[in-house]
Each structure stands twice: as C-alpha cells, then as structure tokens.
Image (cartoon, rainbow, N blue to C red):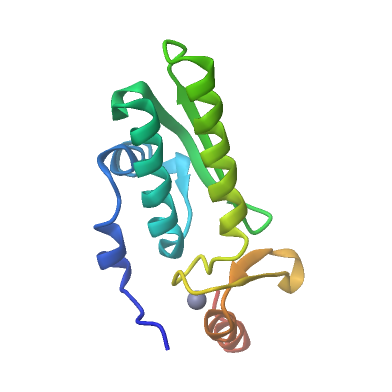
Length: 137
Ligand SMILES: [Zn+2]
C-alpha cells in the first residue's frame, strides 16, 4: 500500500509560481490535489531550465478529457532551445497525468462514467461511484 497524503500536505509541495496562479487567479486553476506533486516536479524542472522562476508564468492549469492541460507563458528572452525544452517538460507532465489519480496521486487510469472523463485509481473511482449511488455529486 502506498501512503496517502492529505490534500493539505500535498499543497505544501506547490511552489511559489503555482501558489500564485492558485491564489490570485482561482478560475484559471482547476485540478485535483493528486496532481499537485506532478505539477511541483514540473515547476521545479521549468525553473531549472529557465534559470529563474521569473522567466515564465502559468496562464491556465486545468483538467480536460481526464488529462492535465498546462498553459505557460515563457519569456521570449530565453534561447529557443531552452524554450523548446520547457515545452517538452510540460508535454511530458501532461502525458504523466493520464496515469496519475487526480485525487490521491496513486497510479490511475482514465475513466468515463456518463461522459465525465477523469483519471482515477480504483479506490477513488469506487468512492466516486459510491457517492453517485447515494445521489451526491
Ligand atoms: Zn486515487
């Protein structure tokens, strides 16, 4: 069994750039806590590539069709080679999200109950199904 971390603990892994978009542009941030560590790793990588977090910002981080969509603005002052590497890092994180439970970070698969696609582990999917049976959202 993997150790499940609580959302509050997951939040600690968010870096300043990510906290900024979440706190100040709330409507632009719409993913579950299970993806926070993934975003944290991506953000660390982007900072490493850019040299400083001031060279990029996030315009939108959301879930679409069960996968992470991460839109960034990268400074045109960075060499094209670096910008390409940063784009690749974002693409890699987006791919990884399709195998990561959006609720708890455990390995997950894409599920499509009644049209609302999301990536969840067995446990979180069962919990969601149970909530639906009880008539909750
Ligand atoms: Zn889960």
